[in-house]
Image (cartoon, rainbow, N blue to C red; front, side, top):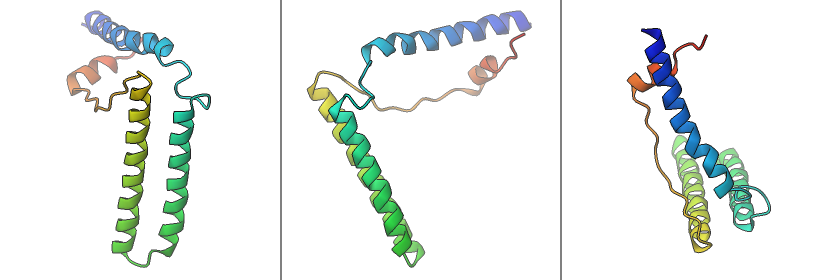
Length: 114
């Protein structure tokens, strides 16, 4: 019983690792400071964090804090959208999405490897 589960887990791990390994070449240099769009994105995030920190210090109520956090989330989303659009203009399509791992698959991957 363990061997088939281990084989299945190994196959799943190989299938999920292969696209990531191939993507390494495609996106080489995209997420470092040599990419001006990424550098702008990092700068926008840093500025948003500084503003959040300062605005939270001045927030007097829960409603003020909620508004400050909502503003921070909008700024982060805007920075991400700008980065994705700028990269698309350069011919690189970055996708947003959600990954969901079903409990059955998670159980297979969590099998101890002896």
